[in-house]
Image (cartoon, rainbow, N blue to C red; front, side):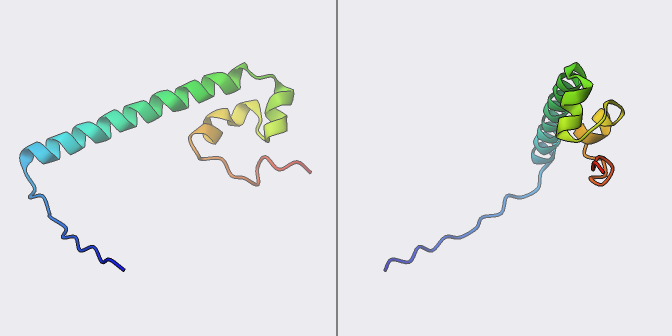
Length: 77
């Protein structure tokens, strides 16, 4: 059996590294925002029956997409 040894090398913190990390976080946040806006647009295009089939109402579309919806709220009785 072969054993592989690796050593973790830490990258020293620098202004450039912090800037690139901040820029990457910003780009990732912007992309997530666009994807969520497209999901909201697609859900708003659905009719009420289709929304009821997936367990949300028209007034809860934004909360469902942004992850703020209580799962018990949409439960049918």
